[in-house]
Length: 153
Image (cartoon, rainbow, N blue to C red; front, side, top):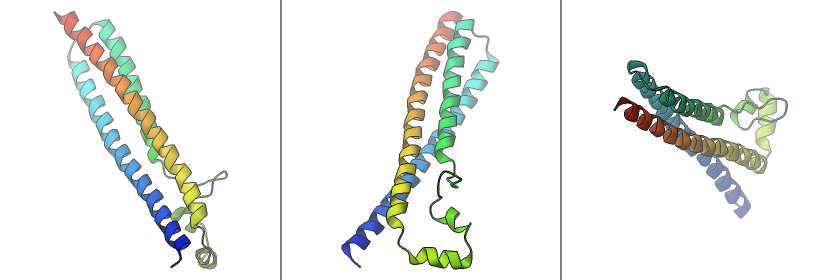
């Protein structure tokens, strides 16, 4: 095995591992956002709150929903389409047996590394934006809680 072959194999595995790590983080954050939204619903539906708490809390909930949308976008499967060639398994699903044999006889790891790296960056960017939104939503929800407690006193 040549140095180039080893490096391509290593880089290909590294990019795929990074995508898997990002998907795992995204899944955990989706569960966290879902739990937050369920908790917020339970608390806010059972108590009479000041209007200001509803407004600020509503903005926080809207940001949590936006974060959930970004997280879902981050884990959306890449099946290619007109603008983009899928990588690995999805591409194979569109080929005949002969085309699969021909495709596997070529070394396309460098192309796959480039495409998968762009995909990983998009996923990571969506994850980062979602984390930022969750942080701002948390601040707004804390402010809403302070308003609610201050209004109840």
